[in-house]
Length: 396
Image (cartoon, rainbow, N blue to C red; front, side, top):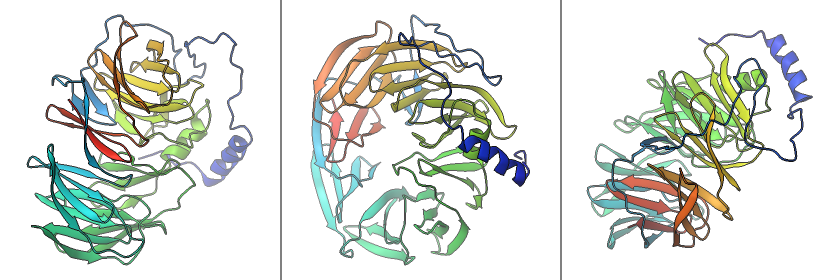
Protein backbone atom coordinates (compact mmCIF):
# COMPACT_ATOMS: atom_id res chain seq x y z
CA UNK A 1 0.00 0.00 0.00
CA UNK A 2 1.06 3.58 -0.58
CA UNK A 3 2.60 5.45 2.26
CA UNK A 4 -0.06 7.52 4.05
CA UNK A 5 0.80 11.12 4.76
CA UNK A 6 -0.93 13.12 7.44
CA UNK A 7 -3.48 15.49 5.86
CA UNK A 8 -2.09 18.53 7.66
CA UNK A 9 1.37 17.73 6.39
CA UNK A 10 0.01 17.45 2.85
CA UNK A 11 -1.62 20.89 3.09
CA UNK A 12 1.61 22.34 4.44
CA UNK A 13 3.69 20.82 1.66
CA UNK A 14 1.19 21.88 -1.01
CA UNK A 15 1.27 25.46 0.27
CA UNK A 16 5.03 25.45 -0.08
CA UNK A 17 4.89 23.93 -3.56
CA UNK A 18 2.28 26.41 -4.77
CA UNK A 19 4.71 29.23 -4.05
CA UNK A 20 7.64 27.64 -5.86
CA UNK A 21 6.25 25.49 -8.64
CA UNK A 22 8.65 26.78 -11.28
CA UNK A 23 12.05 25.39 -12.05
CA UNK A 24 14.72 27.30 -10.13
CA UNK A 25 17.83 27.86 -12.16
CA UNK A 26 19.10 29.14 -15.49
CA UNK A 27 19.88 27.62 -18.87
CA UNK A 28 23.28 28.41 -20.28
CA UNK A 29 23.22 30.15 -23.69
CA UNK A 30 25.26 27.36 -25.25
CA UNK A 31 23.14 24.62 -23.71
CA UNK A 32 24.17 21.08 -24.69
CA UNK A 33 21.93 18.02 -24.08
CA UNK A 34 23.75 16.76 -20.99
CA UNK A 35 20.82 17.13 -18.60
CA UNK A 36 22.07 16.78 -15.05
CA UNK A 37 19.78 16.02 -12.12
CA UNK A 38 21.37 17.15 -8.89
CA UNK A 39 18.70 15.79 -6.54
CA UNK A 40 19.33 12.82 -4.25
CA UNK A 41 16.60 10.80 -6.02
CA UNK A 42 18.35 10.75 -9.40
CA UNK A 43 21.75 10.00 -10.75
CA UNK A 44 23.56 12.46 -12.97
CA UNK A 45 22.38 12.14 -16.56
CA UNK A 46 25.22 12.19 -19.07
CA UNK A 47 25.50 11.89 -22.83
CA UNK A 48 26.73 8.34 -23.49
CA UNK A 49 25.98 7.81 -27.15
CA UNK A 50 25.35 4.26 -28.38
CA UNK A 51 26.86 4.09 -31.86
CA UNK A 52 24.88 1.14 -33.23
CA UNK A 53 21.41 1.52 -31.78
CA UNK A 54 18.54 -0.73 -32.86
CA UNK A 55 15.05 -0.68 -31.36
CA UNK A 56 13.36 -4.04 -31.86
CA UNK A 57 9.99 -3.92 -30.08
CA UNK A 58 7.99 -0.82 -29.19
CA UNK A 59 5.54 -1.17 -26.32
CA UNK A 60 4.25 2.39 -25.68
CA UNK A 61 2.17 4.17 -26.76
CA UNK A 62 1.60 1.47 -29.41
CA UNK A 63 2.89 -2.08 -29.40
CA UNK A 64 4.51 -3.33 -32.58
CA UNK A 65 7.21 -5.88 -33.34
CA UNK A 66 9.92 -4.59 -35.65
CA UNK A 67 10.77 -8.10 -36.85
CA UNK A 68 7.99 -7.59 -39.38
CA UNK A 69 9.22 -6.08 -42.64
CA UNK A 70 7.14 -2.93 -42.97
CA UNK A 71 7.32 -1.08 -46.28
CA UNK A 72 7.65 2.71 -46.01
CA UNK A 73 7.50 3.73 -49.65
CA UNK A 74 4.17 5.38 -50.46
CA UNK A 75 0.86 6.40 -48.88
CA UNK A 76 -2.59 5.53 -50.14
CA UNK A 77 -5.78 7.19 -48.94
CA UNK A 78 -8.50 4.67 -48.01
CA UNK A 79 -11.45 6.47 -46.40
CA UNK A 80 -12.74 9.76 -45.08
CA UNK A 81 -12.94 9.84 -41.28
CA UNK A 82 -13.26 12.48 -38.58
CA UNK A 83 -11.64 13.29 -35.24
CA UNK A 84 -14.01 11.00 -33.29
CA UNK A 85 -13.47 7.97 -35.51
CA UNK A 86 -12.44 4.68 -33.90
CA UNK A 87 -11.19 1.83 -36.07
CA UNK A 88 -11.57 -1.92 -35.57
CA UNK A 89 -9.73 -4.47 -37.72
CA UNK A 90 -11.51 -7.83 -37.68
CA UNK A 91 -11.82 -10.75 -40.15
CA UNK A 92 -10.02 -8.87 -42.95
CA UNK A 93 -12.52 -6.01 -42.63
CA UNK A 94 -12.21 -2.50 -41.29
CA UNK A 95 -15.02 -1.12 -39.11
CA UNK A 96 -15.15 2.57 -38.31
CA UNK A 97 -17.61 5.30 -37.33
CA UNK A 98 -17.98 8.42 -39.43
CA UNK A 99 -20.44 11.10 -38.36
CA UNK A 100 -23.72 9.20 -37.73
CA UNK A 101 -22.78 6.03 -39.59
CA UNK A 102 -20.86 2.78 -39.15
CA UNK A 103 -18.85 1.91 -42.24
CA UNK A 104 -17.52 -1.56 -43.09
CA UNK A 105 -14.63 -1.52 -45.51
CA UNK A 106 -11.42 -3.24 -46.58
CA UNK A 107 -8.19 -2.10 -48.18
CA UNK A 108 -9.97 -1.69 -51.52
CA UNK A 109 -12.88 0.48 -50.46
CA UNK A 110 -16.27 0.68 -48.80
CA UNK A 111 -18.34 -2.50 -48.49
CA UNK A 112 -21.32 -1.33 -46.48
CA UNK A 113 -22.57 1.83 -44.76
CA UNK A 114 -25.07 1.62 -41.89
CA UNK A 115 -26.76 4.89 -40.94
CA UNK A 116 -27.50 5.28 -37.22
CA UNK A 117 -30.56 7.13 -35.97
CA UNK A 118 -29.24 9.51 -33.30
CA UNK A 119 -30.39 12.75 -31.70
CA UNK A 120 -29.45 15.99 -33.42
CA UNK A 121 -26.24 16.74 -31.48
CA UNK A 122 -25.50 13.15 -30.45
CA UNK A 123 -22.35 11.48 -31.78
CA UNK A 124 -20.56 8.14 -31.62
CA UNK A 125 -17.50 8.38 -29.38
CA UNK A 126 -16.37 4.77 -28.95
CA UNK A 127 -16.33 1.75 -31.27
CA UNK A 128 -15.09 -1.59 -29.97
CA UNK A 129 -15.13 -5.36 -30.45
CA UNK A 130 -16.15 -7.94 -27.88
CA UNK A 131 -16.68 -11.65 -28.42
CA UNK A 132 -16.47 -11.18 -32.23
CA UNK A 133 -19.26 -8.60 -32.16
CA UNK A 134 -19.03 -4.87 -32.87
CA UNK A 135 -20.44 -2.39 -30.34
CA UNK A 136 -20.53 1.40 -30.27
CA UNK A 137 -21.31 4.05 -27.66
CA UNK A 138 -22.58 7.62 -28.04
CA UNK A 139 -21.86 10.65 -25.89
CA UNK A 140 -25.45 10.35 -24.63
CA UNK A 141 -24.46 7.00 -23.08
CA UNK A 142 -26.38 4.81 -25.51
CA UNK A 143 -24.89 1.39 -26.24
CA UNK A 144 -25.58 -0.26 -29.61
CA UNK A 145 -24.58 -3.57 -31.19
CA UNK A 146 -24.22 -4.27 -34.90
CA UNK A 147 -26.48 -7.05 -36.17
CA UNK A 148 -25.83 -8.07 -39.79
CA UNK A 149 -26.55 -4.90 -41.76
CA UNK A 150 -28.49 -3.24 -38.96
CA UNK A 151 -28.05 -2.39 -35.27
CA UNK A 152 -29.78 -2.82 -31.93
CA UNK A 153 -30.00 -0.50 -28.92
CA UNK A 154 -28.66 -2.51 -25.96
CA UNK A 155 -28.76 0.04 -23.14
CA UNK A 156 -29.33 3.72 -22.40
CA UNK A 157 -27.85 5.20 -19.19
CA UNK A 158 -29.50 8.57 -19.87
CA UNK A 159 -26.45 10.63 -18.93
CA UNK A 160 -23.64 12.44 -20.71
CA UNK A 161 -20.21 10.86 -21.12
CA UNK A 162 -17.20 13.11 -20.71
CA UNK A 163 -14.55 10.84 -22.23
CA UNK A 164 -14.08 7.54 -24.03
CA UNK A 165 -15.16 4.42 -22.13
CA UNK A 166 -13.13 1.21 -22.15
CA UNK A 167 -14.08 -2.46 -22.26
CA UNK A 168 -12.80 -4.69 -19.46
CA UNK A 169 -13.62 -8.28 -20.42
CA UNK A 170 -17.28 -7.64 -21.18
CA UNK A 171 -17.77 -4.84 -18.68
CA UNK A 172 -17.97 -1.39 -20.21
CA UNK A 173 -16.52 1.30 -17.93
CA UNK A 174 -17.94 4.78 -18.55
CA UNK A 175 -17.01 8.21 -17.18
CA UNK A 176 -19.72 10.87 -17.02
CA UNK A 177 -19.24 14.63 -17.21
CA UNK A 178 -20.41 14.74 -13.58
CA UNK A 179 -17.40 12.72 -12.34
CA UNK A 180 -19.21 9.39 -11.99
CA UNK A 181 -17.79 5.99 -12.95
CA UNK A 182 -20.28 3.37 -14.15
CA UNK A 183 -19.90 -0.25 -15.17
CA UNK A 184 -22.28 -1.69 -17.78
CA UNK A 185 -22.22 -5.45 -18.23
CA UNK A 186 -22.41 -6.47 -21.89
CA UNK A 187 -23.76 -9.86 -20.90
CA UNK A 188 -26.80 -8.87 -18.78
CA UNK A 189 -27.01 -5.05 -19.19
CA UNK A 190 -26.68 -4.49 -15.42
CA UNK A 191 -25.41 -1.00 -14.53
CA UNK A 192 -23.30 -0.45 -11.38
CA UNK A 193 -21.88 2.75 -9.89
CA UNK A 194 -18.14 2.33 -9.32
CA UNK A 195 -17.25 5.65 -7.68
CA UNK A 196 -16.95 9.40 -8.09
CA UNK A 197 -14.01 11.67 -8.84
CA UNK A 198 -13.15 15.35 -9.12
CA UNK A 199 -11.79 16.40 -12.48
CA UNK A 200 -9.00 18.97 -12.65
CA UNK A 201 -8.83 21.19 -15.70
CA UNK A 202 -6.76 19.58 -18.43
CA UNK A 203 -6.42 18.74 -22.10
CA UNK A 204 -8.57 15.82 -23.30
CA UNK A 205 -7.11 13.38 -25.82
CA UNK A 206 -7.31 9.71 -26.77
CA UNK A 207 -4.98 8.54 -24.04
CA UNK A 208 -3.90 4.92 -23.76
CA UNK A 209 -5.31 2.75 -20.98
CA UNK A 210 -2.45 1.09 -19.11
CA UNK A 211 -2.55 -1.72 -16.56
CA UNK A 212 -0.23 -3.08 -13.91
CA UNK A 213 -0.25 -4.75 -10.49
CA UNK A 214 -3.99 -5.35 -10.52
CA UNK A 215 -4.87 -1.76 -11.49
CA UNK A 216 -6.00 0.13 -14.56
CA UNK A 217 -4.40 3.52 -15.07
CA UNK A 218 -6.77 5.88 -16.91
CA UNK A 219 -5.94 9.46 -17.88
CA UNK A 220 -9.32 11.24 -17.91
CA UNK A 221 -7.56 14.38 -19.08
CA UNK A 222 -3.97 15.59 -19.02
CA UNK A 223 -4.31 16.70 -15.39
CA UNK A 224 -6.71 14.05 -14.00
CA UNK A 225 -5.31 10.57 -13.37
CA UNK A 226 -7.70 7.81 -12.28
CA UNK A 227 -6.83 4.41 -10.80
CA UNK A 228 -9.32 1.53 -11.00
CA UNK A 229 -9.24 -2.01 -9.64
CA UNK A 230 -8.69 -4.30 -12.64
CA UNK A 231 -11.03 -7.00 -11.33
CA UNK A 232 -13.94 -4.99 -9.94
CA UNK A 233 -13.52 -1.70 -11.88
CA UNK A 234 -13.93 0.13 -8.56
CA UNK A 235 -12.42 3.62 -8.52
CA UNK A 236 -9.55 3.73 -6.02
CA UNK A 237 -8.57 6.97 -4.29
CA UNK A 238 -4.90 7.38 -5.16
CA UNK A 239 -2.53 10.29 -5.24
CA UNK A 240 0.01 9.08 -7.80
CA UNK A 241 0.44 12.44 -9.50
CA UNK A 242 -0.06 14.43 -6.29
CA UNK A 243 2.58 12.35 -4.48
CA UNK A 244 4.98 12.81 -7.38
CA UNK A 245 4.53 16.58 -7.38
CA UNK A 246 5.23 16.71 -3.63
CA UNK A 247 8.49 14.79 -4.03
CA UNK A 248 9.71 16.02 -7.42
CA UNK A 249 12.38 18.71 -7.56
CA UNK A 250 12.16 19.56 -11.27
CA UNK A 251 8.68 21.11 -11.44
CA UNK A 252 4.96 20.36 -11.45
CA UNK A 253 3.47 17.59 -13.59
CA UNK A 254 0.16 19.06 -14.77
CA UNK A 255 -0.07 18.35 -18.50
CA UNK A 256 0.70 14.67 -19.00
CA UNK A 257 1.41 13.68 -22.60
CA UNK A 258 -0.01 10.19 -22.09
CA UNK A 259 -1.11 7.74 -19.41
CA UNK A 260 1.79 6.80 -17.09
CA UNK A 261 3.07 3.30 -17.80
CA UNK A 262 4.95 0.78 -15.65
CA UNK A 263 8.40 -0.56 -16.49
CA UNK A 264 10.61 -2.53 -14.07
CA UNK A 265 8.77 -1.27 -10.99
CA UNK A 266 8.56 2.42 -11.89
CA UNK A 267 5.88 4.50 -13.58
CA UNK A 268 7.05 6.75 -16.40
CA UNK A 269 5.49 10.20 -16.12
CA UNK A 270 6.03 12.28 -19.29
CA UNK A 271 4.75 15.86 -19.20
CA UNK A 272 4.29 18.03 -22.28
CA UNK A 273 6.34 20.75 -20.57
CA UNK A 274 9.50 18.61 -20.84
CA UNK A 275 9.47 16.93 -17.42
CA UNK A 276 10.15 13.18 -17.15
CA UNK A 277 10.12 11.21 -13.91
CA UNK A 278 10.34 7.53 -13.00
CA UNK A 279 8.25 7.20 -9.87
CA UNK A 280 7.32 4.24 -7.67
CA UNK A 281 4.18 5.25 -5.72
CA UNK A 282 4.35 2.20 -3.46
CA UNK A 283 7.52 3.31 -1.69
CA UNK A 284 7.50 6.98 -2.85
CA UNK A 285 10.83 6.49 -4.62
CA UNK A 286 11.99 8.44 -7.67
CA UNK A 287 14.57 6.53 -9.70
CA UNK A 288 15.55 9.46 -11.88
CA UNK A 289 13.96 12.57 -13.34
CA UNK A 290 14.97 15.19 -15.89
CA UNK A 291 13.78 18.42 -17.47
CA UNK A 292 14.73 18.75 -21.14
CA UNK A 293 13.59 22.42 -21.18
CA UNK A 294 11.54 21.90 -24.35
CA UNK A 295 7.91 21.03 -25.00
CA UNK A 296 7.46 17.35 -25.88
CA UNK A 297 5.36 16.64 -28.98
CA UNK A 298 5.43 12.83 -28.99
CA UNK A 299 7.27 9.87 -27.49
CA UNK A 300 8.01 6.19 -28.01
CA UNK A 301 9.14 3.54 -25.53
CA UNK A 302 10.75 0.17 -26.34
CA UNK A 303 10.96 -3.17 -24.57
CA UNK A 304 14.69 -2.46 -24.05
CA UNK A 305 13.82 0.59 -21.94
CA UNK A 306 14.69 3.20 -24.56
CA UNK A 307 12.62 6.37 -24.20
CA UNK A 308 12.48 8.47 -27.37
CA UNK A 309 11.26 12.06 -27.04
CA UNK A 310 10.44 14.35 -29.94
CA UNK A 311 10.25 18.12 -29.48
CA UNK A 312 9.58 20.76 -32.12
CA UNK A 313 13.32 20.82 -32.86
CA UNK A 314 15.09 17.76 -31.49
CA UNK A 315 15.14 14.01 -30.88
CA UNK A 316 16.28 12.69 -27.47
CA UNK A 317 16.72 9.00 -26.65
CA UNK A 318 17.36 7.93 -23.04
CA UNK A 319 18.13 4.48 -21.71
CA UNK A 320 16.47 2.99 -18.63
CA UNK A 321 19.21 4.43 -16.40
CA UNK A 322 18.41 7.97 -17.48
CA UNK A 323 21.50 8.40 -19.67
CA UNK A 324 21.10 10.28 -22.94
CA UNK A 325 22.26 7.87 -25.68
CA UNK A 326 21.14 9.72 -28.83
CA UNK A 327 20.52 13.36 -29.63
CA UNK A 328 20.05 15.24 -32.90
CA UNK A 329 18.12 18.08 -34.51
CA UNK A 330 15.47 16.81 -36.94
CA UNK A 331 15.07 20.19 -38.66
CA UNK A 332 11.38 19.69 -39.50
CA UNK A 333 8.54 22.16 -39.26
CA UNK A 334 5.32 21.17 -37.50
CA UNK A 335 6.25 17.61 -36.40
CA UNK A 336 3.22 15.68 -35.14
CA UNK A 337 4.10 12.06 -34.37
CA UNK A 338 6.85 9.45 -34.67
CA UNK A 339 7.47 5.73 -34.87
CA UNK A 340 10.67 3.68 -34.88
CA UNK A 341 11.51 0.52 -36.81
CA UNK A 342 14.88 -0.98 -35.94
CA UNK A 343 17.45 1.69 -36.90
CA UNK A 344 14.96 4.00 -38.64
CA UNK A 345 13.05 6.88 -37.10
CA UNK A 346 9.98 8.06 -39.04
CA UNK A 347 8.55 11.49 -38.23
CA UNK A 348 5.12 12.52 -39.47
CA UNK A 349 4.60 16.24 -40.00
CA UNK A 350 1.94 18.28 -41.74
CA UNK A 351 3.64 17.74 -45.11
CA UNK A 352 4.51 14.04 -44.98
CA UNK A 353 6.76 11.34 -43.49
CA UNK A 354 10.49 12.00 -43.06
CA UNK A 355 12.73 9.00 -42.39
CA UNK A 356 16.02 9.22 -40.48
CA UNK A 357 18.77 6.73 -39.73
CA UNK A 358 19.14 6.71 -35.95
CA UNK A 359 22.87 6.06 -36.01
CA UNK A 360 23.96 8.43 -38.79
CA UNK A 361 21.28 10.94 -37.64
CA UNK A 362 20.64 11.77 -41.29
CA UNK A 363 17.43 11.89 -43.30
CA UNK A 364 17.28 9.33 -46.12
CA UNK A 365 13.68 9.43 -47.35
CA UNK A 366 10.59 11.64 -47.58
CA UNK A 367 7.02 10.73 -48.56
CA UNK A 368 4.87 13.74 -49.36
CA UNK A 369 1.39 13.75 -47.84
CA UNK A 370 -0.78 16.39 -46.22
CA UNK A 371 -1.63 15.33 -42.66
CA UNK A 372 -3.86 17.10 -40.18
CA UNK A 373 -3.48 16.80 -36.40
CA UNK A 374 -4.47 13.90 -34.08
CA UNK A 375 -2.47 11.17 -35.81
CA UNK A 376 -3.03 7.56 -34.74
CA UNK A 377 -1.06 4.51 -35.89
CA UNK A 378 -2.29 0.95 -36.38
CA UNK A 379 0.15 -1.91 -37.00
CA UNK A 380 -1.92 -4.73 -38.51
CA UNK A 381 0.03 -7.78 -39.71
CA UNK A 382 2.56 -6.32 -42.18
CA UNK A 383 0.61 -3.12 -42.82
CA UNK A 384 0.75 0.30 -41.19
CA UNK A 385 -2.41 2.40 -41.14
CA UNK A 386 -2.44 6.09 -40.25
CA UNK A 387 -5.53 8.04 -39.21
CA UNK A 388 -5.64 11.78 -38.85
CA UNK A 389 -8.70 13.96 -38.22
CA UNK A 390 -9.82 13.73 -41.87
CA UNK A 391 -8.64 10.50 -43.51
CA UNK A 392 -7.49 6.92 -43.06
CA UNK A 393 -4.31 5.97 -44.95
CA UNK A 394 -2.27 2.84 -45.55
CA UNK A 395 1.52 2.90 -45.95
CA UNK A 396 2.71 0.64 -48.77
